[in-house]
Image 1 (tube, rainbow, N blue to C red):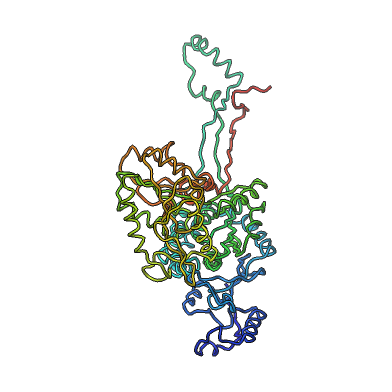
Image 2: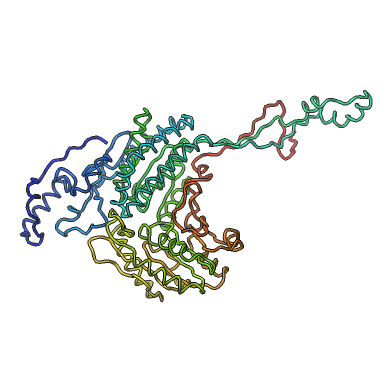
Length: 600
């Protein structure tokens, strides 16, 4: 990113004097300062640097107090609106100074003109990138992984700061991209097609007659015709192949809860498959989008490759809709809610494009009567409270066999009492803030809906009065038939319910519209194999004795029903990022037809 120069519009000395109460300042002075900051269009740059000292590490990632949010054809730019990245730990700023002292940094978002310029360059770059051998493309992705390793701690800290997840999870998210890079390097030498036996027989009239008279000829000459002569007149002389080619450009639209890991699932695979990538990060995590892009851009520049191979935009729904409607993008990967995902799918399908959807989850853990209770309690804690309940794989429903119900709930409440809530960057914190004030409002409203539908609060159930978006981890006893249970409340709310039989538990697990992740705790093989079989869980992820979250990259990640049906990361997910061609090659001189058809 080019160096940016910042102008001090207010003398720094004023900020070194003892702090004054905002309310004690004359109203005319407050209005004048507010107007000056607005008119100067430099709401952050007044200090010549970051608003808080703890944000200074961001300069190691190429970030400044104000950042252009579009990486287009090798240059940083932006002609859209200016937005502020807020720290969810303390984002309620003074009404007279909206978001000034609590802002991490500002970002200039993309406009549609920026988008169009970027897509033209990206489409041109695709013609070059797809011609480079796949193992060479893998080497570039390997270098991206190495570059990420050098910035692991800084990037992890940024994820924690801007998104709100605890620091170990932030670092773990960046590590997941590094792991994806390693995986993709190996994959770049294994993008194999298939050789398929052809049914087309070369059986000419001469051969037919020869075969009819073969016994007579053999008797007449008292000798057998050799197999070589027979193969020459009756053989396939055809070969069927499957050939995999790049799509060209892959669009990736990611969500705030995993602001860079989901990019890794998609971009690492898309790049080794020969595609260029157009990325629109979440509007509320723009700094992560910029920092990640800067690392990829440096690797491309070092290797003298077109920078437009990786194009990124910070922006809102307007840019996302443009990606969905753009015929130059054969595949769009979207991560978000089922409601928005359906709209994206409709726009992509209208132009006959392909869509890869990773949408809502409403995941259940089943605890059987023979389960290891301590193991299950620890698993439920991580699955329900991790990332403040904002993972798509978060456990939202806990199904307990009636014989272990009371014991399990009591133990779970005890470990919930020990959960430290606070700044996600502080050691020992297990529950950070929700991502936005709106998320906190939705949590509070959701609790009221839960109560109105018969839900009984066993633990938590309230927002926390603080500057940030903190809420209590919550356990609710509720009937599985309640309508609210069918919906995804994106926060640390766990619904607890009883069951008597395995069939009843499986029926409850499968009764919601979503179908992402599920898990059962049991030691019995007959239960395990029913659970993973056709009459078991209907989810894309079916676990035994582990949480619903924390998926490994080696398997295909994704779900069924309203979760969207997409698969990302491992296994054969790479096939979605390529175009399959079935090729039949005739290397003979005859023209046999399939199904034995004789046409003229």
